[in-house]
Image 1 (cartoon, rainbow, N blue to C red):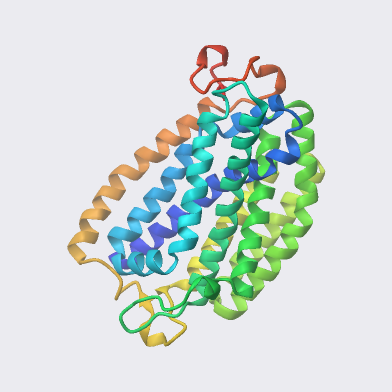
Image 2: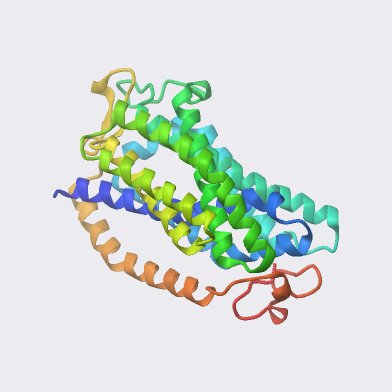
Length: 349
C-alpha cells in the first residue's frame, strides 16, 4: 500500500468516526421538540450529549485538516465549489455550540426557546447537508481542466443529492433516538425508544433506495457487502427498538453508519472528486495529493497522536456513561458552569 492510499483510508476512518459520534448528537438535537415536553426534560436530553458533543466535533476538524494536508487539491476544489453548503453547516454547528452554553444563562422561557431553536437548526441543517454534499461528491460535479468547480448551488440540489441528504437526516434521527434510550431513564427513555421504532421503517426504506442507487451507479463488486451489512443492521435496529433493546439497537445503527460511509468512499476510490464534465478532469488520490515527504511526516504524526485522542475520548465516554433522568436534574435554569449542583455524571446545562 502506498502512502496516498493509506491516507485515503485514514480519511475514510476519520469520517466514519465523526458520523457515528456526531450522528447521534444531531439526532438528539433534531428530536428535542418531540421528546422534551418541558424545560426539565429538554435539559435531560441536552445533558446526554453535553459532555461529549465538542469532543465529537474534533473528528470533523481532524478529517478536514487531513484532507487539507494530504490532498490539498481536493480540499481547494471541495471548499470552493461547496462553499455555501459548507458555510451553512458551519453556521449550524456554531449556533448549536453557542446554544448549549447560553440557553441556561437567563431565567426566561423565551430565551431558552430561542436557543432551543438554535440547537434544532444546528442539528437538522448539518445532518441534511452532509448527505447532500457527499452524495454529490460520489456522483461527480462539474470540474474543468484547472480543477475548478464550474457549477452552482442548484447543481448540488439534484434528486440523488437530495436523497442522500434525506438518508442522513433520517439515519441520524434514528441513531439519536436509540442513543437517548441508552442514556436516559424513565418516561423519556420509553418515548425515545418508541420514537426510534417509528423512525425505523422510513429510515430503512429511504436508505435502501439510496444505497442501491449508489451501488448500481457508482459501486464496486465488493461494496455490495456494505449495502447488505447496512440493510441488515438497520432492520436489526428496528427490531431492537420494538423490543426496547436500545443497547443492541444503538450498536446496529452505528454499524449501519459505518457501512454507509465505507460504501461511499469505496465507490469513490481512487477518485477523490470525480468530474462530470470529463473523466480526464477528475481529481484522484494521485493528482490531488501532497508530496511524498509531507505524507511521510504526517503518517508519523497520525500514528503517534491518533491513539492518544482515542484513549482520551474513550475515557470521557466512560466517565459520563450513567443514565440521566428528570430526578437527576438540579432545580433552576442550570447555568453551564454551575457544576456544584450536578453529579459527577452530569453536565449542568
